[in-house]
Image (cartoon, rainbow, N blue to C red):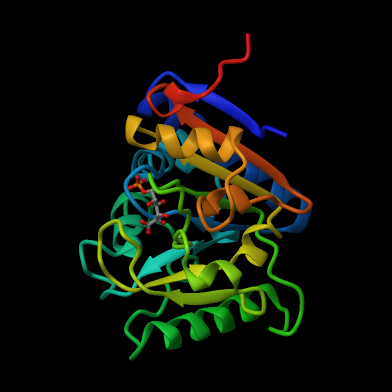
Length: 252
Ligand code: 6PG
């Protein structure tokens, strides 16, 4: 069954809708459970959304002291490297929104190996969610994801061994075919599919083929990993712009 896809006019419309959905999800989580746990997407698409969240119109609507920010994936680079997802979130959201220190949990990419960083991040999640690593995956209130033009999401790349990791919440992955050519650390499918909500943000004509395959086709997990994001007991929302939606079958 085709997931719910909202076609936005352009990148700005997509960013505004995404920011409002994130605010509402955080508010609902805090009302229901006293805190909100969000996993942020990297790359370039979410930058505009993070920027809007940092502006006064929305910044004041999120109780940042009860909102905990994690990363769906990270590049295995120094935290101050321009390609670091943490550096991008720090620049676009954490600093301008004056999010209190201790609310964001970066992947410890200063460790010696990507595998060590992945293991350490899993321990961070276990502590933050108050569960043992032998237990069920952490259940994020909202996970933000992007879509690569090859159909990857987070750092779950086509044909990668990470796609079949089901006994760990976080794993390391060699570089995909898309830049930057660095090792990655990524949440695994069990965590993505345990979320209460998953929100994909997809912008640009270069994503049109992958998006059509994922939301309308029958690709294998190896071909289009994003098609395997199917929350077991959660919502799945696609916010896409007209350019990315250009190959979709428009329902009449
Ligand atoms: C990353 C992201 C990755 C991203 C897609 C889309 O670390 O690169 O987590 O999964 O969401 O590659 O990237 P763009 O938004 O830059 O197109």
